[in-house]
Image (cartoon, rainbow, N blue to C red; front, side, top):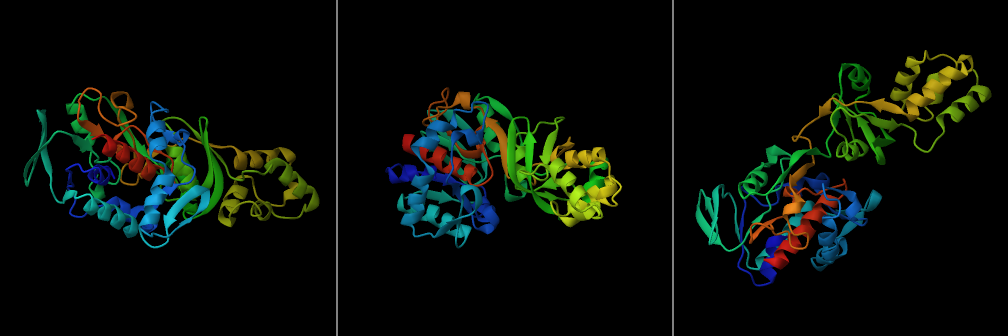
Length: 374
């Protein structure tokens, strides 16, 4: 995005990529259909040590601007839940669009070029296993640590640190959570069960689907809350958001006293989860359960407090939290304040969006801003 924007302005642009093919992460995104932006983009939906930093770039190049580009390339798309926009066809449509724009801007794309050293004197010099290149400006657009099997590394953080830019400690974001033996004893038999929940961590809360796995919990609600969760802290799950569990159970106790507890719980929860929860409270006929026991069952559904032991790490993380500190960069141009001509964009920066196209929009917006400034 940065290269095509600078190229369109008549700048001479060299785009170096250590991968053998361009846009690998684009191609696997959104189940192969690329969730390329979101209609509800707002700075409040991005996580950063400076929550206001992203505002300028997101306002200068919006989701509507990117949709305009998509439209000019006649790419059909559709909206799923929560403002998420996907290609009707394939993620290859978005990649092809970006590469076509680079061709139009006469961008020199070099693949399978491994960078071995970068120095700064009168401009920047980049050494690679295919020779050296010099330029008055250098853009770090090499992402974060997420999904190392796709070639992700900490290159941007390491290089930025060499130039004296501060780094906010990186950690996995939008990642499944793992749990200890006691919780796994309940979760593992439920592997594959999904349901809508409200997941909370601190002041953050998300109402989306949750999935039980052999290692713990996943699904959109868990991925979202993982970005706000900190080691040692609890998360809270409401398994039946929008319902008063206590009132519902008492009402059924009086209306259908001979109904089995698991049968009643299965009216709110997936059957396997209802059975597991009923066993915790002795199952049996609901009419024989004291109100106190039903209140405890209601609390178990509405306020399930858990302390994860960790995450599934960068291998399963969709993004990297942290990165180059925003205090070191211009929020309008993404240029390093202390190193003229050095720009840092995208996931390499300490700006991380919600699940659902937000991180792609940050890539488009930050890339466009740098491309306009070079």
